[in-house]
Length: 151
Image (cartoon, rainbow, N blue to C red; front, side):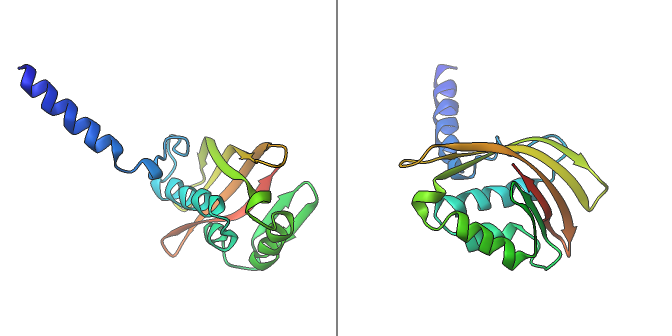
């Protein structure tokens, strides 16, 4: 009996090490599609590697993308990328991003509204944090952000 316990415990420790970079626990909320959490994990990872182009892969690649921030509304994927590049010109300015999703409201099989918190930890600058609401749509089998209101 004791040997079975230790073997089970050993396997639990081994498997616990897998997927640590893919720990989606702070990104999962009830009812939210797993693909949305996975996309947000990829966005967080891209940001933390100073890859704004990779970060933007979670957004609708269209002129109809809408980003709402403290300075107003930005329309379009390219304009939103430029806005990020201006505000975060290098890895130091970007810091380390963490998302924490709080609530998913389903708007049917192909749309949902997500509310959460973001936090940036920076070495040489003051840390920053805020909230977001993201409108997601499933288009051609892929979940993408079509509107982002971050404050």
